[in-house]
Length: 159
Image (cartoon, rainbow, N blue to C red):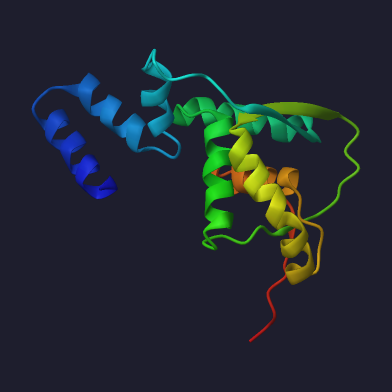
């Protein structure tokens, strides 16, 4: 569907409908579907707060990229949680840093989705051999999906 929507956006662009093409591309972007949900007055703006303690530079980069792509950080985190639950993505081991400027980045994620991922973190920790938390999944997925560099440990075995 993504490819067909991008083709439709190109047809709109070619026909001189640049604003409509931009709207279609925005919806196709990672987490872009949330733009539709956010514009629906019947849709409740739910979710529970997930505080992520990270360094100030990383927070600023993530927020800038989310703005650039027109997505909410919470929607991107929710996508990452779903990928983990579906077995489509394995969260990497994050490198612990002692950055002097730690800040809290608050993102809102559906409570039931958080409960599902929370129920899996102990099993993931045991299977992967390093601590996996909602926060570590969220931060790693945000960085990967938004194209922000984040230090991770290479956990792949050499072939």
